[in-house]
Length: 131
Length: 470
Image 1 (spheres, rainbow over the protein chains, first blue to last red):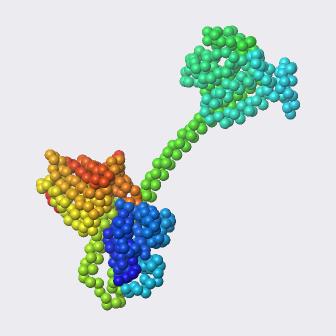
Image 2 (cartoon, chains in turn green, purple):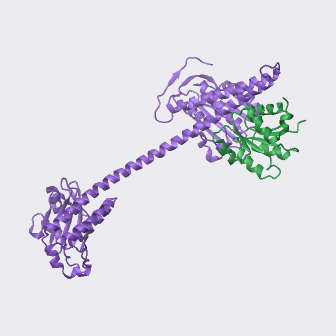
Image 3 (cartoon, each protein chain N blue to C red):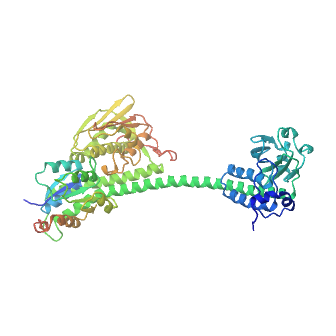
């Protein structure tokens, strides 16, 4: 059982499912949510928290910015690093607004995505990867 | 060089007036209304100040206010009037005098001295007004006036006149007349400037209005382009990720293969994303057609229940992914003459809306008939739409929620409305916050579809098709 755990928050179901497959292939344990509200519910119920959250910014019900506000207000969740994903331009500005650790522009390159994620999960993720 | 004091000047006015070469400042105003001494030199100095004031005037009232005061001060007269020509009448627009004159009154151009001055384009100097045939004596009897000078404003085609009046008999000399004419010329330039300024101002305001309209159109276009590129990137992101994932599963040069069911999933996903991409592109094309006024409808006989069921079947995957069970209430025999493809798009847009805004909750799709009208409804159980948004959501680029809370072009419902309007139908939403949304489309069965346009232009293109069903 892997000790590497990520949460994917993405409203586009296919994209979410592909990200899950990719990270599972890389040996991650994957949690997933379709919007900010679902993600919060999942985190509140989780016995084990993820080491990283991959967060889409544009989502119905509760968007990425609103999720960030709720996350940082919760001391148990506040320290989990967040990488935001967006298809918008002005990605640096969005990252600052969301006070996120890092950002990825959609469409994402798999290598870049895995590199960013492994940076936040430590070198262990490369050694114990499934490849 | 000005060396004399105002007070000492007043001590010897007659001599200085007579020779007209006084270099001192204007004499102080005589509080008793007695005639002030006239000095040509001083008057010309004063005139320079007046011209400067006039050059700063931005409206006619200000010009008149400056002139009526200056006219009296320059000559030391007991009264001054400012007269404007209004076609065949003379309008006594303004005055400054020791007693009331004719401010606000109008006289025929042929029956007053200002009219004579304007018609003859020359100055009138009258020492005894009651001895002059050009003077309508009855108009002067109630006033203090005994003598006057009247100069035209703009000599070649006068637009007005300036009058100077004395309470005691006074024969204006050449210098006084010259100073008044110089004032009139300056007033003429000032009035032309005011008119030019007014025209410029109006043009500038017009330009500013046009600029504001252009800016907001540009802003809407930029916003649309940014939304459109965002929306196009989402399926592309999924397709690209899918390809890279397959590449990792079975890298080139390796003998690894992708399990059959995973390949099947990958194909299904690819098909969905390509469909979504095609839908987006069609939506973009539709919107540009609507804006160009070329939105052609092809009328044919359509079975609405069959059409709705077809769309729901096509979206089965997406509905399942969104955990939206569909409940169909389809009455048979609801047929009408509509554009099959466009009505299909209405159902698609309403259904994708429900998937987008109300995931994880059942969706009801219904078709029924009421008299000569077909009814189509899509009822979701999402957060609902605030009443103040019920009209707005059918507008271009509008959404019921903030931009980062939604995906899509913000055009779905706008296109729905355009299509329904083109069929002489109507669409509305019944909803409240937290109560889901019920979209209701009414289509006349025998609608004669016409071109959907964005208002004014756009040729009505209507193509009747002989074929019945698709």
